[in-house]
Image (cartoon, rainbow, N blue to C red; front, side, top):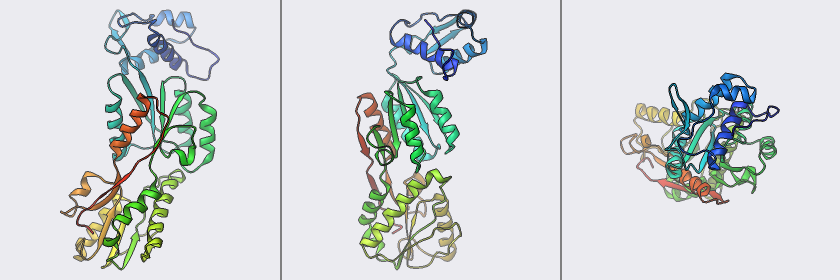
Length: 341
């Protein structure tokens, strides 16, 4: 019933989990069936007791298995019929990613289990998590390291026929091999700013403020695309502009409009405007990315934002997985017009 390969690179406890999941999926194990005891598995497989305990503990945590003190472990009755067990790898857990996660889990429904992990832009951790997950899940959703072809090539070598989906980068870096739901920052920034052109042009200068969210070299892809979208808009519409590339604080001035992709910088600019008595929408302008609840009330009348709907990204991704679609979807942006312009 439970089989493992002692020569495999996959951790033994992960192999136990996969074997039991496979038996449940094939209906060899049914709701209420008792699993082999810890002692019998140790003896039959020739492995340590702690390995079996770790596997059973993870199965219990995910709800696949239930335990009865003094009696053993059983296939959970309310878990039968799970269609998808999903490995979800994010870079960082930021507010907008919470929106993606919540909508994704809700759309996948009760017949899916989602395990979420974070690589924190650490290449070694990124590889470790993926290698340990390989073969353990029905589907893999990955928010990859950005801006380095080595990691797209590495992913190709790791996965063969697995169901893999790329989130947030997609076709630009990973080509047509993996279905994806992503943002096209350059295209959508330009298109969104064009919708605000008349408001922006009433100011003497349009300034892209420093983006301090780049945690490492692996986040520069998004930063560059944002900057390119900003430049394309300014050049095509003859807008006087400036890009503040360093981390030094710059002084805000009357008759300038600011494009602000960093929330800490937005807070600083709002505070400085208050000290100088500068009014948003009249003396200075402000646009922020992305949308968040705070920005609808900040400065009383709110800050204009350009942003995609992250909940829709999660829903589209879930729809692709549930229906076996192999698409490459770009998430459209919306302009939330407020009085800061």
